[in-house]
Image (cartoon, rainbow, N blue to C red; front, side):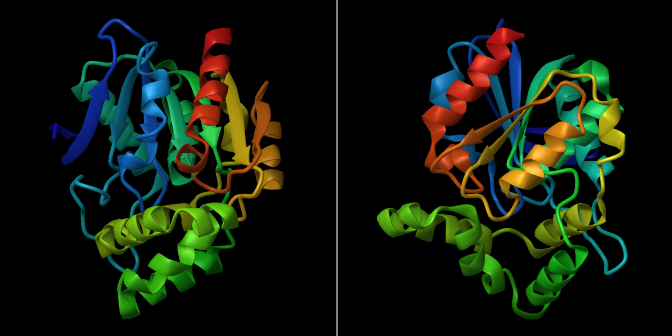
Length: 265
């Protein structure tokens, strides 16, 4: 299990694929580890050098404390990703982010445009709200722990057919959410709650593809279309039969969209 000191914290990452291939960085959603990309990697790892990492406070990456008034920020999370690239000697990468990972990717593309070659934004938006949703979720976690939300998020992450047909997967992902450190989840929830990237996104210069699962209720297709409309030259693609985490439900189809877009670059 590779670990590295980057951006002032110990980050857990995985790097696989040809050493001379273009780097493709994957950033995952809140409440998950980088294993949500496991089924996507085999479809892309012959053509790209795949870099996955656990976000601050998630998976095996170091958690830093938060208070009621001071959590994480989208700038901090973008700096974490840039710090990881620096620590690994990666000057420029394609960046694919999901949900909060997609918000981080938007911010990184604005703050460090020279670091981002192609930008893929999956099931995300420039603002994910309303803020009260995150405030209420934080309060529930502080009162009753991560188990208070673990079951409920499954209906937002996966389609009904996937939940009915893959109960083993649902139990596993429920356990994954329940084991996220409280401060890690709350810190990232505060970053989402406080972020509105819509105006800044007009400055994104990287070629951009926005993808959304057709059945996503967490960041629905209309929000993704709005995101694409706010980024100069961005394309939008709908992924049928998927909800909020298409890399789990439709890994081959998602990988094909990503590969097709990057080949065009």
